[in-house]
View 1 (cartoon, helix red, strand yellow):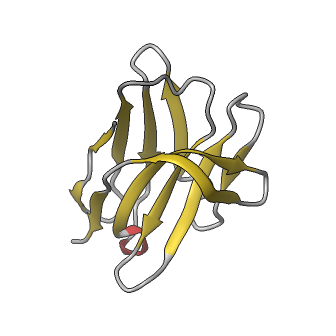
View 2 (cartoon, one colour):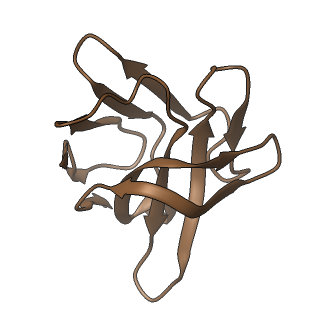
Length: 123
């Protein structure tokens, strides 16, 4: 089971941290990532990090503003989002598995998905 938390309403320029906690398995050896879906649009892989931590991918739209991390002691992954803009409004899904390269996040083979948490950036 994978449970997300941390979404909500934030003003432009603000920050949010999303959390994704796994139970029943450990995620320390997995590729992890976050995918979002804006209203009326398809899913976008925004960020991922490989199981070894040696490869990280950031979509151009979030580079320099979003950070992904994992805490193996809590079996939790995080998405720190700073300098948020209305374009970041979307439902965010954590994902465990898939393939993370420097150019994109291939989520076709994701093993576990979070339930999704909504982020609304608005004044």
